Length: 94
Image (tube, rainbow, N blue to C red; front, top):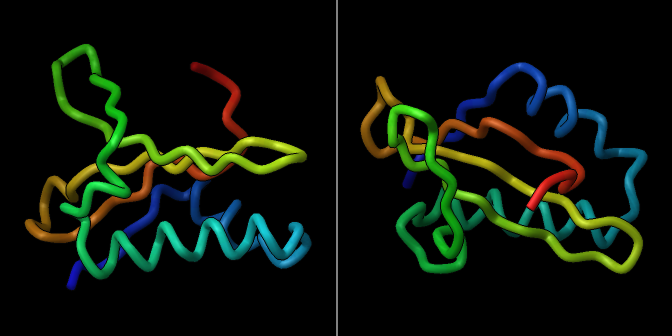
């Protein structure tokens, strides 16, 4: 099992989900549960982005009828086996 770590802005968004629609909250929680259970699972590793250095950032799309959201994450650089959530929020890019 992996432990989740958060970039500050992603953590703030996660903490504010109390006001979000229940379907969105459930979708986010499902992704986070999968990251904890098995960050190597196909469901959280379908799409990637690369930094200018070539590091892999995993992108999980949450498609909702009102607004699409995204979770961006990497394997924690200092804690092997754990996950660092870089971004959680509206999908404002391709």
